[in-house]
Amino acid sequence: MEILLYISATISAILSIFSVYFFILALFALKRFKKPPKAAPKNKFAIIIAARNEAKVINELIDSLNAQTYPGDLFDIFVFPNNCTDNTAEVAAKKATVISCDHLSIKCKGDALTFAFDTLMNEPYHYDAFCVFDADNVVDRNFLSEMNDSLCNGANIIKGRGEVKNPYDTWVSGCYALYFSMCNIFVARSRANIGLSAKLIGTGFCVSRQLMEKLGGWHTKTITEDVEFSTICALSGDKVHWAPDALYYDEAPNSFSVSMTQRTRWISGIMQVAQIYLPSIFKTIKKGSFRFLLDYILYLSFPFSRAFSVVPTIITIIAYAIFAGGSLLNYLIISLGSLALSYIGLCIGSLILTLLTGLSVKKAYKGIFTYYLFTLTWLPIYIYSLFVKTTSWKEIRHDRNIKAEDVVEIKSLK
Image (cartoon, rainbow, N blue to C red; front, side, top):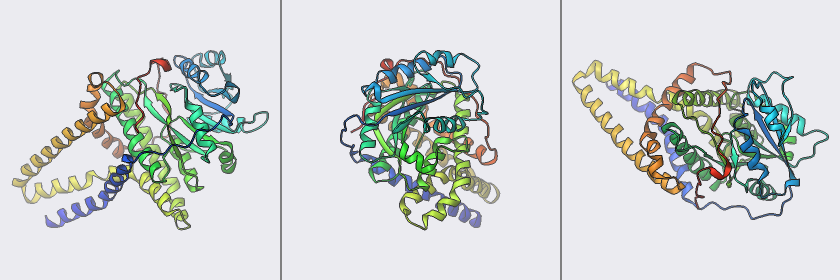
């Protein structure tokens, strides 16, 4: 029994490296974020929207882009419909430039972005930077101005702050709202405060033409093109900057089954990125940028660590069941007590985050009380993705056509 418990404790100690690292990193979110100084409008943007069956929502995104405070002659909107069975192209063509992908085999969003960048980086187009959105997004009117500020101050790739535009629909969308806010604060803000890469999570980012030319265009291979592209940037020594006032809103799933499908794609994709790029990162880390690349190693390895986190528990249960059956019940009772305390703690943390971001506690209570369950459902996703590789991108339908002026106001954390 002692040997099994020793093995369990050893594995737990190794896996705790990740928890300790990310906890320490999260503490830097308490530091005030230093924003770049304001700059005069200078950069000309190409807005890229890859769209698949988004006729119900794409108008709201285009309208929010056309309402930008940034000069209208310094940005153009391009929609790249792919695999559509509705009238997305016809709807978008009324307010934006539509470039069809129908002649291509588009298997995922990364394929559409490859075509989009290949098209817009060549004649007759001349753009200084490119912003990428999903068709279900809506954008704050200062988004492009904030991106221009960062570009004028030396940034080559910038991540905006994504929030959920339908946080009160269901408990699932409420949990997504909390998850997005936690990522903004404890992933993006904390890293930005100590000079690490903010990471690309989802959409709402900007990349300079200079960087795209350096990288030779957009050429991602996996179904998580955002994580893969930020990893490619890390290998080239380019940091993802964070622009918290470049705010955009994303439609969260209302269905738990759709959420599981989406999050499985995310985790499986990150694991694929890790398998492809970690060897190169380990080789590159020897040449410099140790702290920067070490963060990526831990970030890409995290899903594997979570999948293996069940191993110490299983070993401990087996040890008690075989060698000390009478103690197994005590162990399970203690474990249930720990879970109960964790639930209470996370409910309190979710409540505080809800208050800080300006959401209505009365309307967001479903997410607050179920966020612990939401976090637990990541575990089977990690384990499943460890053994089953998701290679196809399943369409997620969007129908919450919420206008930019109707989204829930989210406070800017100082």
